[in-house]
Length: 241
Image (cartoon, rainbow, N blue to C red; front, side, top):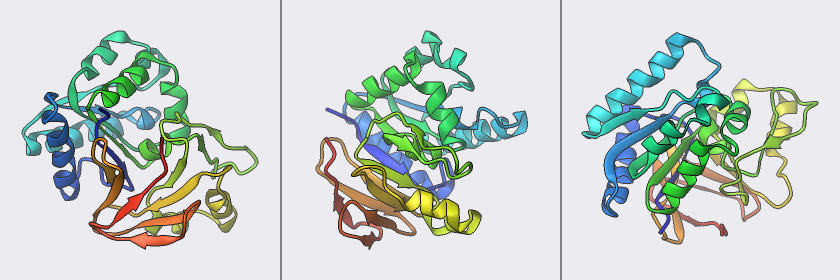
């Protein structure tokens, strides 16, 4: 049975998201997974040492808050993603969390590696998986290149090829020009386009059919299904195989 999945607009490891992360851990532990919290900061791999230390400390504080063991994997390049020792540390963990940064770098670094294979195989056996911001975007078939508009989309990791996520949705369009917004809002093929606000997630529990909104703001269905905005506790059915 596949584990729970959370697509998160922002807020990984923050106190405001501790309740969500605890439920994801509890879901997996109910299926025999270990009380370990794997944190994969690869999307931030090109950032400064200070920022990488920040992510480690933030993740440690959340793991301590939740009473579980932090397993912070310093996977910042393809060489480390190819390291079987890191892949083995993922096994039987309760929650794997892919945090934010650059989604294109994240996909390039993890694609066809032992670490990514371990993420997928453990999720399929009951480990919960969360992706925040870039970590949510990368699960799609493609990732729009809104920073360099003349470049087309790059390949995602395609765990959920039917959907595409715009994280930070309630803030995102204040940060980018209209031309970039048009790129983001143009769906690729028949993808379902979802906007997920900050401190908000769209969550599916195990093999349940419905996805449920968790958080202080909204999830927006922008294309591919009837447009709507949903708040905490409301449910959505997504045609995902």
